[in-house]
Image (tube, rainbow, N blue to C red):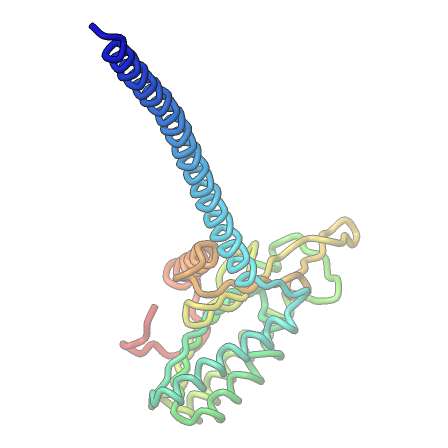
Length: 283
């Protein structure tokens, strides 16, 4: 073999080795880059999952905050009966104005009251707001169910006089309720449906329910003692407003409980005072 052929063979082999080495190096580099890219992809997926988890947690927290805020907004507090009764009237009028805008020709409102002697509600709502509503909305049908404590039951309890003589107020209220019914039933006829009863208990809480959507709830308490006898506080105490029971579980629970006690007293544990009982009247 000549030297020229040998040189050619050696050159070819060297070139081939260089090419193989280059391929090997390139493969290793590519594999390293691929592995790195794979690791980066895995890391990115993990970061995306973490971000999604945090986003879901944030959304859940936001929803809970929104529900809590909504719930808080639907349970308004008033220091006593005055503002509560004003708000009650406003909600009734807003409802009746909406009925008028919706062309409801004969709107109906249902009002239920649990009271001790109707001391604050009588002068500040029953005698004033009820006639105004019937006058201002000529097609209104108003259903009013009132419960208050029998004066005989109050007399048998150990209650100090304080600023209010509860026994006297309850006894007077029986007469006033009968006069009220006779007067307005004659004036408004079938537009005014009224029932009043007395029951034998001192309620832990009291208040007004409007159309089963708005409950203005107060509590009774014993705060001051006179000659070793407790003084009963009723309308002077804080009221709370529960509304939108279809969207607010606390409001739904309170309203259902109020209805439950009102129905029990009215149907099973009370005595008739005055009123009418039309067949179409809802319970």
